Amino acid sequence: MVAENNLSSLFLQILLSQLDNNNFKGSQIPDSYGNMSRLLKLSLRNCSLQGPVPNLGNIPNLTYIDLSLNQLSGSIPSDKLSDNMTTIDLSYNNLNGTIPSNFSRLPHLQKLDLRNNKLLNISGTLVVPQNVTVRLQGNPFCSSSILINFCGAYNGDAGGTLQLANNTDCPPLACPPPYEYALPYPTCFCALPLLIGYRLKSPGFLDFRPYVDKFEWYIMFGLKLNISQLHLNTFALEAGPRVRMYLRIFPIYVDNNSSHLFNKSEVLRLRSMFTGWLIPDNDLFGPYELLNFTLLADYREFIPPPSSSGVSKGALAGIILGVVAGAVTISAFVSLFILRLHMKKHHRAISKRSLCEYTTVTDLEVGTLSHPFFFYF
Image 1 (cartoon, helix red, strand yellow):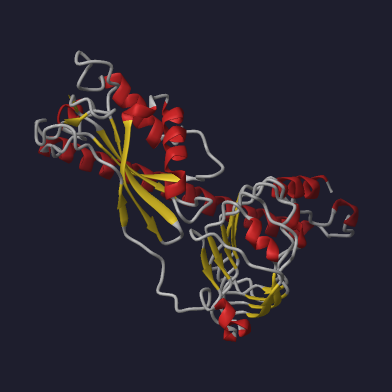
Image 2: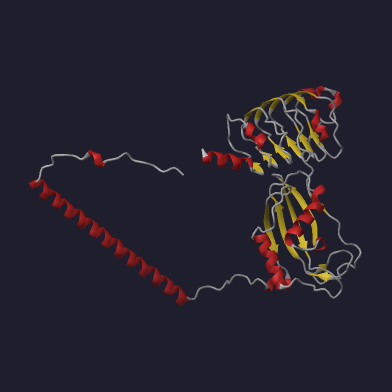
């Protein structure tokens, strides 16, 4: 009972539940999901799930729901979802009834996808801001001309890479490569940045653009650096959804006497922050992965590359002789062990035969036997 209670309490503490592309055929989404008060993201895409959509209106910070490509049925719960909601994807199911009007009152919503269901109407009026992507095609109510804007053809997500603002106030090509103009612009001060490839593995949103400023503050606070030292120049949405980005981190600029480089200890500290996953977690941005930590020019001396020199012939011969000697020793021990085991069995057989010649078994003490037992962990 104690173990069961511990598992239940751990279940309620889950922040991200992403189990896409698993075969849960015949299973339903437990109602207990509605009690996961700390849940931020629920993604059970393409899991062969059946039954109704659980009521998730009591989860205060939920931002992302993807239950698409299942066999869910029944109506969509009408309870209002969290104001933090950015993505609702219930497409390619068997949902019927009406679309709840409370979907219109989600201030941070970016995407509402209810395609290819059996929805018949909208409860009340669906008022959606222009920056929200709504996809309703493939439902019976799409025969109404009133919803033609939401039921048109869908050509896929807008993709590509967004280029952020760059410096245009300094003379071009004034810094010797790979040095660049340091931040903040326009300083026209050349410095050598650290280049970091970074990917958000399970963010709680679909569109990264509204969260760029918040992300920059988050990452630099975690690294204990000034926000002016970061240049996030490109990012792109990938399948998942995931967000891939490239960061440039510059030495702090105070005046023209500032250092053009990070010192060695600071480079090693920042490298360990990324490679050791020491940047504090964030509920909105979720887990991350480091794609690369690139050291340019003078920074390469701080972390020497692994030795590429080959093993000398003498050392190689010593290794081979050591391996052979070890194998011979192990073989001798194994042979000795087998020989002793064989002799012991032979001795027991002789003793047993001798006993049988002079003794008679008259009783069996069954009280010395017991049932086998098992440990469960």
